[in-house]
Amino acid sequence: MFEIWTEKYRPKALNEIINQKHIVERLKAFVKEKNIPHMLFAGPAGCGKTTAAFAVAHELYGDRWRENILNLNASDERGIDVIRGKVKDFARTRAIGNVPFRLIFLDESDALTPEAQQALRRTMEAFSNISRFILAANYSSRIIYPIQSRCAIFRFSSLKDSDAKEYVESIVKGEKLKIDDDAIEAIIKLSEGDLRRVANILQASAVLNKKITEDLIYNVSAKAEPKEIRKMVEQALNGKFMDARDMLKEILLKRGVSGEDIIKQISGQIYGLNISERAKAELIQKVGEFEFRMQTGNDQIQIESLLAQFTLYKKD
Image (cartoon, rainbow, N blue to C red; front, side, top):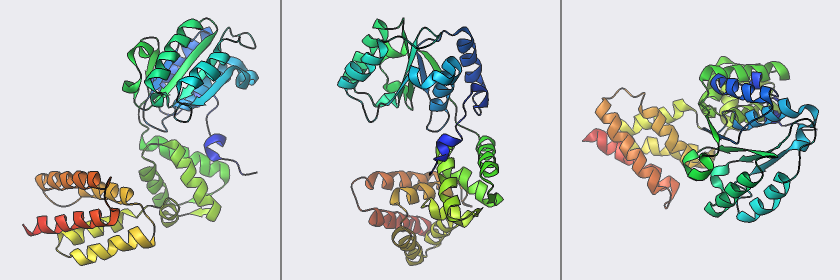
């Protein structure tokens, strides 16, 4: 059976959650009293919002946690019918066990339509004696104020590189893998603090080889190596536009890296160039302009045009 590592290595208890100590302490106090309020978990992707919700359920209900929690992804089921149907039906039934309420977890709740949010507000009011809601959102500002005012708000912070490294090492140890230090650094850069992405990159790499290297990481993640992107940018700035264009075609067409990923990597490389702060600011401005153009234009043509602008900028 193929086991998904994001689930296999998800913490089961609040104490196991990485880098959210300020939140864990508050949640443990609520769980100890067996009386939690409606809660809104806000923060970037992969920082532990879903894990925290499931850990609360584990500690409240023990082995019967699955029977007492309704887990919905609001980006898939975002309409008013879901709130009036599934959510309301679950909210009006009593809990199994010695905890007097059930949990309803709405992941990506910022995707709910305004009408669905209004219906949710009324449901939260009507069944608060036997149900508690946990809402997770990347952008809490998209949740209507009447819901926010009814929730205790928990703001999750982005994970540090050291936390991501600790998570990588725990998986490597658990799966008996071998990994280079450069490969760990590559995973940390590519994941951008998202532990789900860390686990997925590692699992995809381990399927191919138990010895994980930096090259393998970039191959399975469909990203160009930073040194390639840096060389391409430097060639454009040094007036070698055709060489830079050839490198772009190699990365974009032959290796299948998306244009959106390439332009983000170009942006990241500009900050490390040996040019003035003003020059960096002007180049970043151009990157932003061409990323916007890519929404309606051909990726290859737009990035080639950006490289041409770099060449002309250096010439001027």
